[in-house]
Image (cartoon, rainbow, N blue to C red):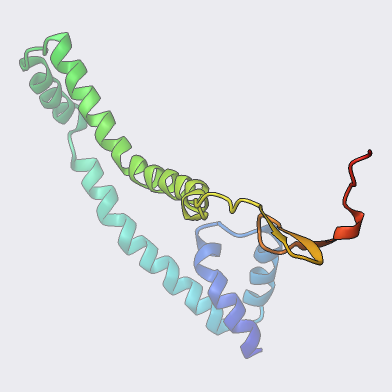
Length: 170
């Protein structure tokens, strides 16, 4: 029963304000019919609600809203209307100031995106590509040609036998 009391006591304030679902309302009403301590707690909640609402109702009954509104209207009518350019300037200042809070994160996000796009390009090795090189060495027995690729990962060596040289036709 104590577990059920803790569940219902958490719902009592909302039940009093009629802010519960139909299922919660049935649960609270079933429990209240069997538990006097929860009924007392609901009664206390109702008394506290009355103590809070009573001064507010009395103050609103004593307040003269018509007179207050008349005083506000008189103050508004006393003021001279601003020229259109001054009222437009005030409106622009107010609207731009409210947008400043949105501009700061937007600019930060834009800078991050630009950095992510441009950063790798700037950090890339910009040195000119290594040019392929070909070396040719002549010797008495063999002629040698060495080819090294641009990135240094390919090397080809040709050996030419001197006997393969073209002999001029006579």
